[in-house]
Length: 256
Image 1 (cartoon, rainbow, N blue to C red):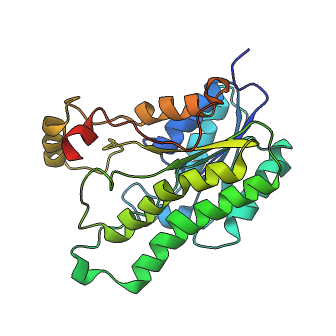
Image 2: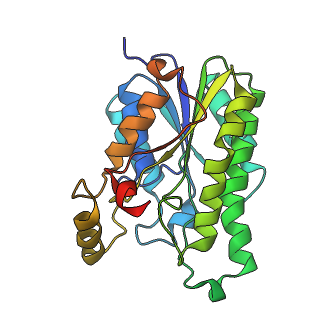
């Protein structure tokens, strides 16, 4: 039997075929889990990749035999986390795994250009929504549950042009031990920094520059992070909790 047979997972921010969320969902389905995919078309419509990707990801997984469902939600809305957990329970009758992969990432230039509005939006989506999502999951009284948060590389080097994003992601890493203690022994809580990952956003010049500096001599692929996250939510990782783990090919060795 696949190791996640009978388990149900919620993966947020899973609306891009080239993204980390979709890669996580593919591995979860391959390991036997049922998966609720989250996305928000209004956000995607403002990005180069456009809206509609959530349905495409779900259709591909279903074609491969996966038991999947979708839920649209604006995670800037404080009621969205409860709705997502409720959707998982309605669709599958239980929820065992939460992967908070969503992110608001808007480069805002130097500190002098940072606005209160953007700080609030970044914290609402990246930090508040994640914390509320874990709270709602805890309310389901999970048994042997799993939570994985995604942070960024702000602890390994400065990100002066992305201060709202970096600070809101740093909060996730900082809250991981406290969340792990709050959910123990019902669930584990860990946090993953995927490092520079090629999801189609970087220029060729930036790709070459980062690859040259990385001891691994390449960018991460979405599946690099997905492999680690799938292990963390699986049966073999039940003794791992409260950890912030970098899966970055050694990028932190030269940035830290």
